[in-house]
Image (tube, rainbow, N blue to C red; front, top):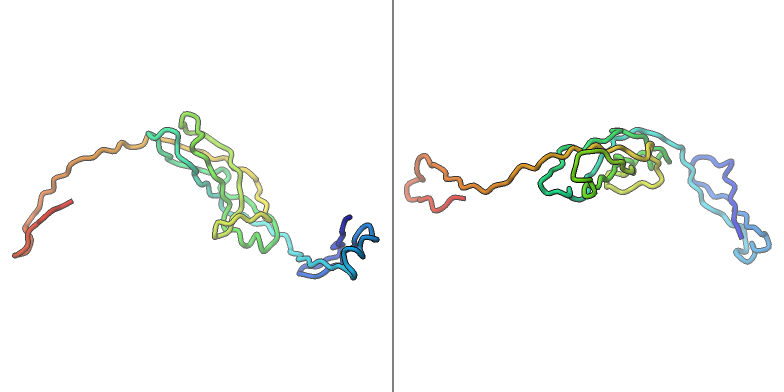
Length: 167
């Protein structure tokens, strides 16, 4: 069994269209009257938005830190229903850091997806290009050390008070 709604002459907006059921002898089993389907037609829109790369995970070597993460391209196009394209805040791509070979700087290809201001993916919108090149620069992390600092004080607390401790 199949159903067909002809929207070839549809106009923008939300309207109901008749549904034909094939084979027709099954139509009476499914329903006792005409079937209608509600369809919303919107214009297609395209616009350019920023691409934001998001580091995910940890570098494989703890003595390294991510110095920079750049996207190529920095902007991309989104195309889809006008209401969805208008809701796009940015395009994002996740860059997995844990699988960098030897923790070295380099390039990775990441898939892009359009998201709204609340970071929800907008599946009805297509990104062009679908992928971006992430350029990662990795550098040695600064060493951390604990050092004792002994401060010098100038003056003294007001009369009747004493310095009890400092941290």
